[in-house]
Image 1: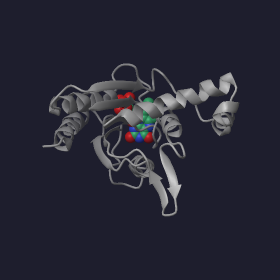
Image 2 (image 1 turned 180 degrees about the horizontal axis):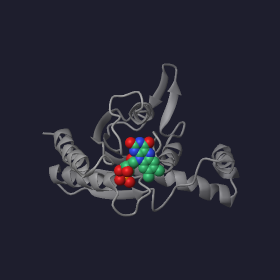
Image 3 (image 1 turned 120 degrees about the vertical axis):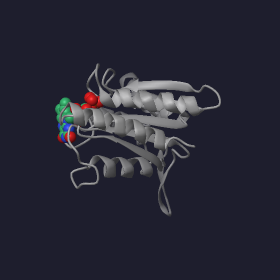
Image 4 (image 1 turned 45 degrees about the vertical axis):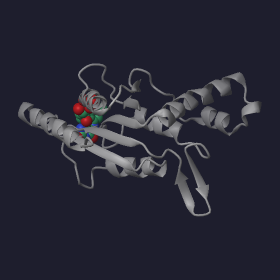
Length: 201
Ligand SMILES: Cc1cc2nc3c(=O)[nH]c(=O)nc-3n(C[C@H](O)[C@H](O)[C@H](O)COP(=O)(O)O)c2cc1C
């Protein structure tokens, strides 16, 4: 059983999403009959480059015609795709930044979504190729937006992850983290309860 943890907080210390993602990983590991491998991809510490013109040109150049620089750029994305393909369980730590996902996480998504590798178009429409994975998504927010129109993160993540074939999505919310110490404590207790409830029996 392989676990991939992707952290996207810009904070090195004190990140609630990273801490709660750690809790999910520990809880998943405890539920496994035997120890699995864990890969931690920390996008705050090791930012992935954005999808710019240079990257697009590299991606659309046939492999055998790529310059060394282009091959190196594509290899960065290949590494993220390989990590994800190898994972049975994916744990995402996702802070809300200005009503969206962190740019660091968007760069990861732009890297892992690749035609004919992680999705393909068929006569019946698009087909995601990253199937059979259990995905836990820890959402941390200063305010409270669950089930409101202002929560663009959940519909976005649901759309793009299921497009890629990841349909077993478990969202864990820690909301109101900036609404005072009591609200913060309550949010963390609630998030830990949601983690327990999300675990397979
Ligand atoms: C740049 C920035 C933008 C933020 N934007 C929002 C926001 O739009 N809505 C919200 O509820 N909280 C917002 N917050 C609060 C964070 O979501 C909250 O602090 C969360 O705990 C961050 O995750 P982390 O603890 O893993 O770093 C923002 C925080 C930062 C630093």
